[in-house]
Each structure stands twice: as C-alpha cells, then as structure tokens.
Image 1: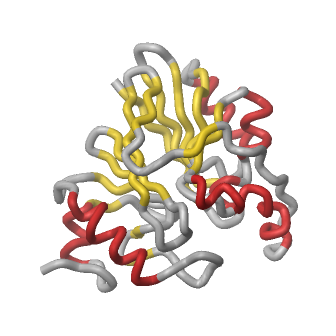
Image 2: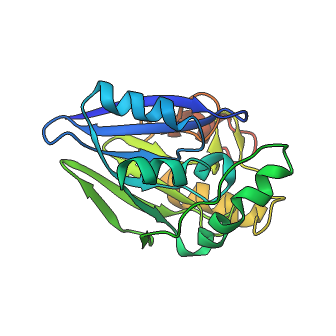
Length: 209
C-alpha cells in the first residue's frame, strides 16, 4: 500500500510529492523544490525513511531543496542525465527571481527512459518526456502519473527556457502520456491534478478528439 502526501512548496508553489511504502516505511520524494523543513515533518509524521529524491527536471523550483534534503536524510538524488547540468546553476537561476537557493549536489544516479525505481513495494517507472527541458521525466506509479512541468490542467509547460522545445513537448504528451488510460490521475508540477481523459478532450494545446 502506498501513501501519498502533497505539498505546494516555495514562492512558485511547485508541487512536491511524498510517496511512502506502508509495509517497509521506505519513501521517495518527487520534486523537493523548497520548504524542506515541511517535507521532513511530513516524513516524520508517517515514520518514513527517505530513500530517493526524484527530480522530474532540474529547474530550481523543483530541485532547490535537494541539497538540504540530502544532507538531512542521505537519500539518493536521481535525475535524467540531460537535466543534470541544471543542478549546478540552481543558485544563479534562483537569484534572477530574487531568491537565495543552494545548488544541488551531483546526482547519485541518472534515470533513463523505462527505468524502474523500487522503493519498498513502490515501483516507479520513468518516462523520458522532454520539451519543457531536455531531460524532463514523468513517473508512473500504479494508476498515477507524476509529470512535472510537462502537462498541466488545461495547459502545458513553458518551452522558452534553456533546452525547451514546443514540438518536442507536444510529442511527449501525445506519444507517452496519452498512451495511458483515460482514468489515470495526473499529478502536475504546479496547480491541481487532472486526468489523462480530461486533457485528451479539453486541453487546447493537445486535445485528441
């Protein structure tokens, strides 16, 4: 059985997700962008031991808490190789928003398309979904998709950042994400959750009739 905890972290209100295995009490955190103290409290409240820090991409609002969270827990940082360079410029990028954020440590492991990350009874399948960033990842866990800034409720991720590409993003959504059942729950990088079926029908950027 998997427990799911959601926190909206940092000034940009990025969605951070804590997934815990009730049987082993092992846990993974997806996109700890900020507010690490709150993440640690949430872990402690469920008596969870953090094993993995998964970054859907390397932008500071999603990976800005890597340094503090790794120092506190010893968890392994995992990201796609093509987004790993962003971890070294988190501080510089955050300063353009007037924020003071530490760079992330180097990744402990690079994630590739199709990799399975096992954490207790939790199995997270990685999908390479570039477009918002070159190494953008989504994670499939049970009937849930954690998509970072690839897809939003009624919208899509920006493609005007370094390495972004609109056509690539649309292909990632249509070829990878939309291959899942309509009732698949989609947990986005900002804002409310949605479903694959809803986005197929109503998302003006990529709806499929």
